Length: 122
Image 1 (tube, rainbow, N blue to C red):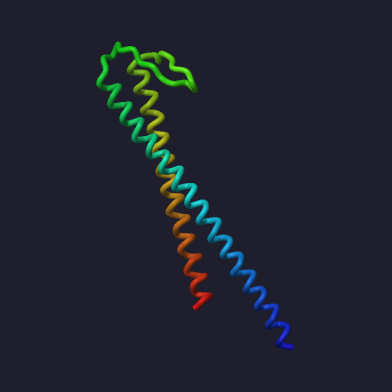
Image 2: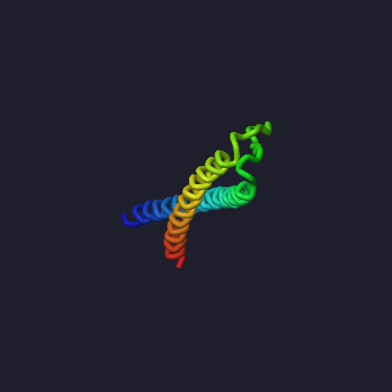
C-alpha cells in the first residue's frame, strides 16, 4: 500500500515545485517591470530638477511655456511653474521610494523562493 501513496506524494511534491517555479517567474517579471518603472521615474525626477534649475535662472517676469499634450502653451509665470514642478517632483520622489521598496520586497521573495527551490534539488 505504500506504493500508491508514494506516487501521490511525489506528484504533489512535483506540483508544489512547479508552483514555486511559476511564482519565481512571476516575481522575476514583476521585479523587471518595477525596476523599469523606477528607472523611468528617476529620469523624470532628474529632468524636473533640471527644469527647476533652469526656471530659477529666469527673471520673475519671464514668459514661461509648458507642454500640454502636443501643445505648447504659455504658463502662468515663472513662480507658478516652479511651484507646479516642485509639487510634481515631490510626488515623483515618493513614487520612486515606493518603487524601491517594492523592488526590495520582490528581491527578498525571489531570494527566498530560489533558496527553497535549491534545497529541493540538493
